[in-house]
Image 1: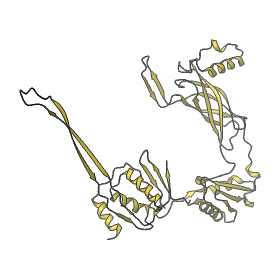
Image 2 (image 1 turned 90 degrees about the vertical axis):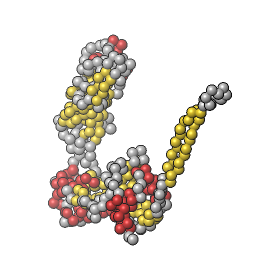
Image 3 (image 1 turned 90 degrees about the horizontal axis):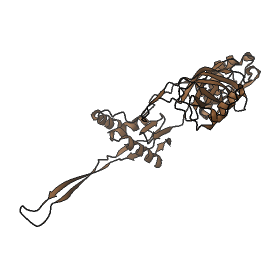
Image 4 (image 1 turned 180 degrees about the vertical axis):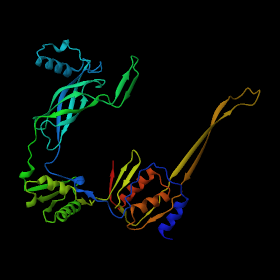
Length: 378
């Protein structure tokens, strides 16, 4: 009897398995096409990270303690710049918290553009809710100031405690966001219209995908302007009709559709029992037998005592131990050469394997050389 017929009869008698293991199987005959902008990006058109050190004031006693020396020094330095000279030893900072401020400067951001900033406490503050971030310069990796952040901090959480030590917390009150509180002060110079060619970088380098992207660009532009440079880069020449209008060329290229190619991979998370398999996973001809050994030990305690009116012997407790060993049935299941991942999963389910058993079987298949895919354990 064919494998599929045997499996169909078994599966009719099986109850649906509980959703303990997430098994993602791509069984579609064709992969969906993706836009080029979703799998690649033009070199130079990227965001830049900004970071700065600042102070959040106006906290209701939930700021840093006096043990945070850097907060004391920062407050003393800030007050001195404003014409107030005070020693750090005379400052109480329970309403102030030292924070690191981060933001992302998008490509082609212009002076005066508004961005969001993420504020993170670096001291022992209990929460930043209700505080205000003072003016904080944000620098790039080159040490130059590109933006300034200031404004109220929204945390979306709270921390409530009592004098007895009981605390109730929601989310993370020591992390907040300053919405539209970043003002761009310096622009990153980048002139697209001066370029005669563009470099398109794939998010996941792959020779097949890179070749398909170049072919899609040439077909969509009705001209051979793209060529594959390596597995992760496509060189795109600027046609004469787009000279001085590179933005329109980029928009046209990004809207083209491509079917990306991926390496066959099986990802296993042993901590959670999660197994994720790609569509192209195949196995060679192999026989699988997987059985479980169950050992059950039962112990009862009996009381042994001497006969009535006997002056010899004593009452004792005697254990009575019984052991049962049961070995589960492990029928031999033959997998034909080149079967799909859907057939593999159905066959393993017919064997009654658990998520942990499935992980062990996949590892054994890889060790035997029968699993035609990369096995990645996270």
